[in-house]
Length: 98
Image (cartoon, rainbow, N blue to C red; front, side):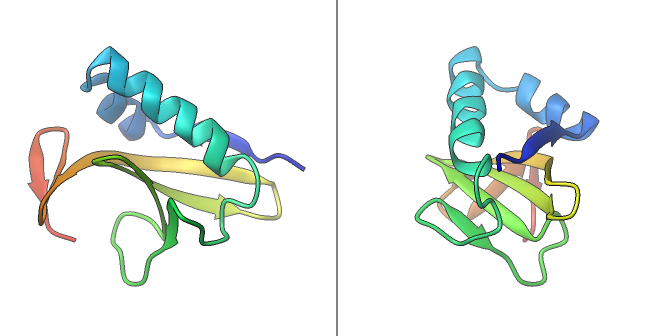
């Protein structure tokens, strides 16, 4: 069964700040990697411990998509999207400590 994917208002804002090409790449990756078994670790998916943003992360090149999974309602909630460069992480132009 495929999971429904929902974007928070904040995640939509983060996505809109990116180039159109990057937006398409990220949205396509979300559709491919989070529709089935989004809470299972895989090459591009990771379960996070003690992360203030969300319990799960999807890596899409230099971008990171933070999300939460509700197995009961079969929904994935995308809560934040940012870009990583070396050991620095930025969301909406602001550097974030993880």
